[in-house]
Length: 81
Picture 1 (tube, rainbow, N blue to C red):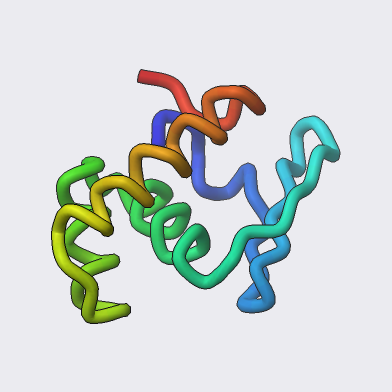
Picture 2: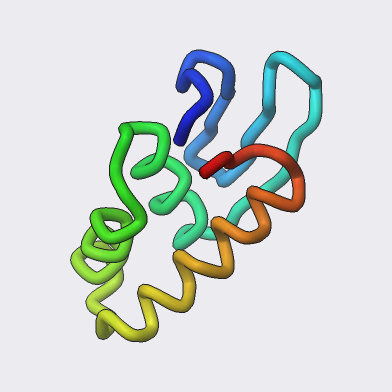
């Protein structure tokens, strides 16, 4: 994730707030793992690996979830390439 991790308030419930803009959203458990991975500086590939480990899903399913979540973050201007 290109923006500073300190910019976000992230709760275990899935609540995520951009402290710079005040915008907030709620992510499900998968989205939360992906968001935290990106905040840690992980690549999309590394985020896929984390999802596979956390939820015991196949790489194809995890890749689809990561791609969809990153696209949503782009729509809300929370992720930049």
